[in-house]
Image (spheres, rainbow, N blue to C red):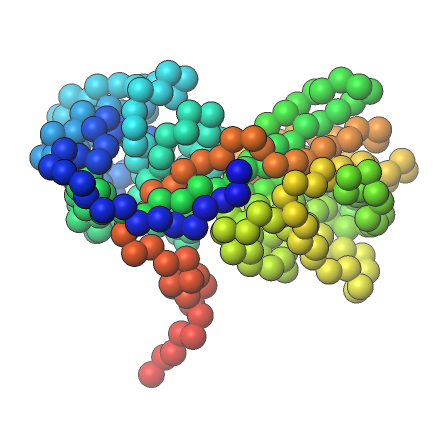
Length: 305
């Protein structure tokens, strides 16, 4: 499915747009987490919305008795994630099968995914529950690690799947194919295969392009390649990308999903990357503007007087 551009919804009646809210928290969020949590619960209860806290999360405000829900048995129609982009990535991977919309409240740093600030959570959540919000779909990548015809690992990533060196003092050597056609063989610190969502993350730091979130495209960005001629590549998301460590490569490799799940690779392994069949639905405040977000987070056209 092609990732959609943000669509603004307007209220249709007095009933809340979402009636069963689930809350996922970043661990050890401190008092800042507790304050956002209390404000969020207050807004939900003021709108007559049934809310529940993830079953494994520590209650940041013990004076508030918290009903619980499980990610394995989703009975919510909106999930609010309080944390940073890392917490959002973790939630997206586990929730993508359930097609439940996700709203992120940013307690981290940049906050490209978790784009609601703590001081705005009451106003924005109230507007969202009243039906004033923007929503869009983002696709994920699926990675399968094959070893002698045996699949030893498979997972998904919203940002990126990265093949990189295991020994920081050495480079890895590998070949890459797209739909069975050899693209190149290279020596580098690795390669980042990213979605448009992930083009603002590791791939950007490695010199990759920013990819508009409504493009059905994947970025392939080499990390410190041992050649001056290599440049990032952008391909259609329907292609199959395969990465194979080269025999004799002295640097061991590891595959990483969103920088959170990691698995070593050996010579003879094949890492196959393709578009995942399920996507996620992100909820934003009404009037969400991706380019305004870039200007703000990346400090474009910043002037100091």
